[in-house]
Image 1 (spheres, rainbow, N blue to C red):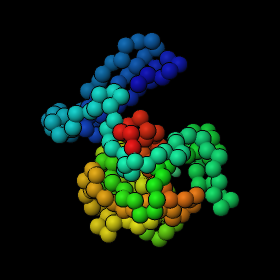
Image 2: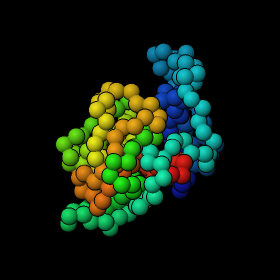
Image 3: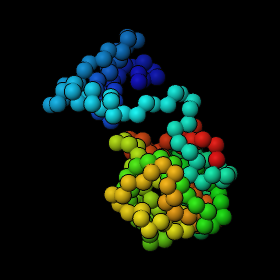
Image 4: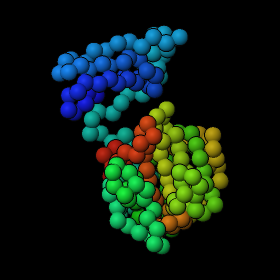
Length: 208
Ligand SMILES: [Zn+2]
């Protein structure tokens, strides 16, 4: 929580998506926890603590691979892959092209299972994608926690019941592997955002 260069800083402790404490770290000092007072007070925090599922231990995967048996053909990180003379990957983390997810290769039509339960947030069925999904073809965003979203790109088809606002269970089939949008061949592009920033899904995922 503290800055690496020890300049001090602050953060917010989240419990089930509810801010329960501000954490203040001074120069070389011990973190101080200041309870955050909200309108609904500690009752809300207690409720959130009850509702929040237990966090997995460090090093334990929190979700299953959405395409079982698929090899990871491109990992998370700086990228030099160009498709149709276009870089799919946007600039990120100081790199001009950064692959913001995992590519899981399987033949077209292979089923894609939701990695985690959540609510469908955005669906693009136009074969290319719009806005933040542009270039990723037929794609689906699923909100799996208040600050956490998962993204599925390049689908061949999206299951008919996958519509914004719909609840999705972990393991539910959401569509089929394809190569729509800017893609080199059939694969699922799987991305995870936490607090609006891309994170590497690999350490959180069971082996495919
Ligand atoms: Zn990809």
